[in-house]
Image (cartoon, rainbow over all chains, first blue to last red; front, top):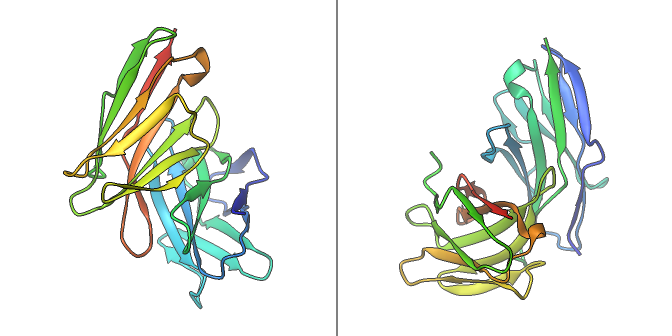
Length: 114
Length: 112
């Protein structure tokens, strides 16, 4: 069955440092997609980055990169040079090719300190 | 602006009542997803429609129902409301191919 696990309920990081948010997943489908979303305190859900299970390279979008380790079933989000505006809740999500569900982890609340 | 429209943005009602939440997906998106986010919780998948047909179902209560209409807008009906139904309800539409979700701003339901 699909499962997403985010083990860090909260993190505090100094501004300008790099941050790694952990995400592990479980699926029996060989074809799947992994996503990260950001939810600021205002509540909206903002798409950050996508990684397909057959993608050869790790996805990158600006300061965001996804450290995809398929054998370990992990899809960690790396934020480089963190900014105060990065303070938010971050959710990892997964979609299986054979299943229209997209499920989310419980999230990690990131606090960037000045 | 994601292009996904949800109404109403806020709703306050009493226990036992029924409400309807409405969602219009982005132009061209055929899939609509509904999620429930309770206070400080993750997003719980409720149900998904594709071009008018139910495609996937999550932990949706029997008191809740949804449908997607021919014009692709969707409605989530919540009945016999309980205090625990207070939450932020998100609708999202999906990009064909990757399945990337574009979320509406959510409907915040408060049950008193």
